[in-house]
Image 1 (tube, one colour):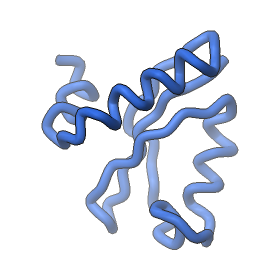
Image 2 (cartoon, one colour):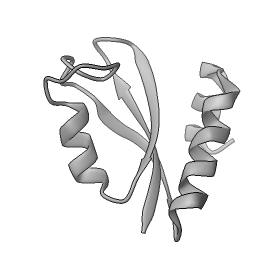
Image 3 (tube, one colour):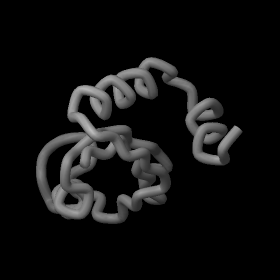
Image 4 (cartoon, one colour):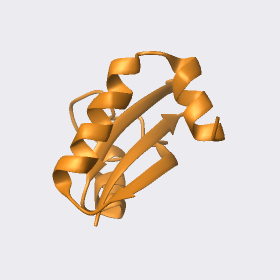
Length: 81
C-alpha cells in the first residue's frame, strides 16, 4: 500500500505534500533534524492522506496536488469539498 499525504507545521504555518510506502517512518524522517524543507521544525503532523495500490498512482496524485499551488484548494480537499 502506498500513501499520498499532506503534513502541516504550526511553526512554519505551511503544508508539505508527499508520497511513501511507509507513512509512520516517513513522518519520523520529516520531524528529524535534517536539511531540507521539513527539517529542523519537528512539529509536522499528518492532516490528510489517501491510499493507493501502486507507487505510480500515489506519485501521480502527489504531483497533481502540488501543481495546484493553492492553499485554499488544498484545504478544501482536506475538508472533503
